[in-house]
Amino acid sequence: MKNLSIRHGLVGLTAMTALAMLASAPSRAQEVIDRGGIRGAGSTFAHPIIARWSEGYRKWRANDAPFPVANSGLEDPVATSAFDYEPIGSLAGLLRVRVGAVDFAASDAPLSSEELTKLGLAQFPIVIGGVAIVYNIDGIGAGELKLTAKAIADIYLGNIQNWNDPAIAAINPDLTLPAAKIVVVRRADGSGTTYNLAHFLAANHPQWQERLGVDTTLSWPTRTVGALRNEGVAATVRVTKNSIGYVEYGYAVKQKLSYAQVQNSAGQFVKPDVKSFQSAAASADWKSAKDFNLMLTGAPGNDAYPIVATVFALMPKQPASPRRSREVLNFLTWSLDRGSKDAGELGLVPLPESLVVQVKEYWQSALKAGS
Image (cartoon, rainbow, N blue to C red; front, side):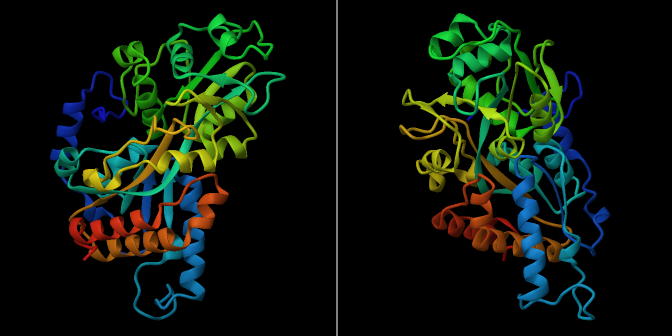
């Protein structure tokens, strides 16, 4: 896996400088008041499922669970009805959990064990999904356009600038592509969605690896249009003719965007959907991945979608408030055990039971609150 360069929009800030700054920053965990609902931040990719799970968990706590409920007169300082998750991007979520501003972060860009040790964090998967390549071209519907990794990279690099470029036309001989400039839309914030797309493209395009690399923020060509968060990219593509972008699959469905078939490692063109995400996830060797540091892009198999991403939760190994950390784990236990149906309805793949067991065992060894 490529090393994750942790940056947050400061021009010229290197990976090592940013990591050192994070590792040496004084923890402000005490600023997270030990009352009120649990707080999380990060991945916009994960926002729809976390919102769905938090509502289900709140209702479960209020009606069925054998736990005290906030405002019931029983001693329970954590009010799950006030659950707060801010979809601010994977990198921003990482920065917030490191200084104790939130109880957990969600990120689509895994950290190495070395980085986790420096930051005092634990990392584990909670759900799996896919990055859809979306477009707005008159007369070309969802799943009709086919793209290779090379074509996608060349569009973002500026090597391909028109929809009727011979390189795209050769892949799509049955389509009438317009002689129009491609409006290239990308994330303007630190994004795990960007990280997964970049990881896929860098593995298949030497120029991408050399010029842009793999990161949550990239030095995009100036001709690209930046938009904040998954919803921002989706909204921009939806209203911009002849545009292309990349978003979590659920946003594409919700915004009724057209999405491309993408060529996988077996040479097959595959649509993004739950079935093709499951096919990619089936090959994952989680047991061999220390701290679950594993990427699912470029998975083998004829039916595997090639840009599949995992959402990871990040939590302090030594939390300022073990009680709040336990409440996060209560929420995640409910989500992993009871939230499979919700994940499927949102175009995501729940963790297989064997991986859920592995995650819970990891809590016991890596988290003070997990024991």
